[in-house]
Length: 207
Ligand SMILES: Cc1cc2nc3c(=O)[nH]c(=O)nc-3n(C[C@H](O)[C@H](O)[C@H](O)COP(=O)(O)O)c2cc1C
Image 1 (cartoon, rainbow, N blue to C red):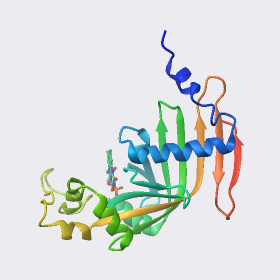
Image 2: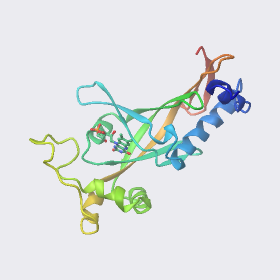
Image 3: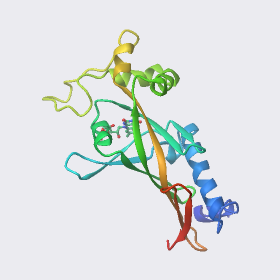
Image 4: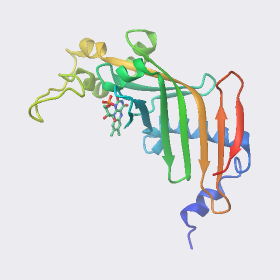
C-alpha cells in the first residue's frame, strides 16, 4: 500500500524535524527551489502590502531570485501597478507560501525596495524572456479603470522593448523575519526567525 501524503512528507523530514537550525535551512531550500521549479508552490508566493487606505491587500507574484546569504528575495513588477506606490509609502511587506506536498507554510516579512533603470533592474530585465517583457508594454498601465474589458493593448515584440523597460521594476525584499510551520502527524512544529535588531533570534512557537 502506498503511503498517505503526510507519511510521505514525514519520511524526508529527518534533516529538520525538532531541529531549529535545520528548519531554517529547509525554509531557504524551499524558497530556492521555488525560483527554479515553476511547479513548486513557492514559485508563486503571495505578497501582502498596505493599500492607500491602510487596508491589507494580497496578490500573487513570481519568485525570481533568492540570495540566502544576503537574505534577499526578488520579484518583478510593473512600476505603474498599485503595489509599487504601496511599497513606496510603506516598504514593509509580507510574503506567504504553503507547500502542500511538504506540509510547510512559510510567512516572511521584509523591507522592499523597487529598482528601476539601475543595474539590478537591467540585469533582471536581460535575464527575463521576451514573452515576459511584453507584459510591461501594456497600455494603459495595470490597474487603470477601463470602460470595456478589451480597452487595453499588450506591448508588441521588439519595437517597444525600450518603452517596456521604462515600466519594469525589480523588487528586492530584505527578509527580516521568517515563520516556519510544519504539519506532521507526530506533532506540528512551528518556529520564528527574526533578524530585526541585527543578530538572528530564533525560537520554537506553539503551532
Ligand atoms: C500566477 C500569477 C503570477 C503573477 N506574478 C506576478 C508578478 O511576478 N509580478 C506582478 O507584478 N504581478 C504578478 N501577478 C499579478 C498580480 O497577482 C496582481 O494581479 C497584479 O500585479 C496587480 O497587483 P496590484 O494592483 O496589487 O499592484 C501574478 C498573478 C498570478 C495569478
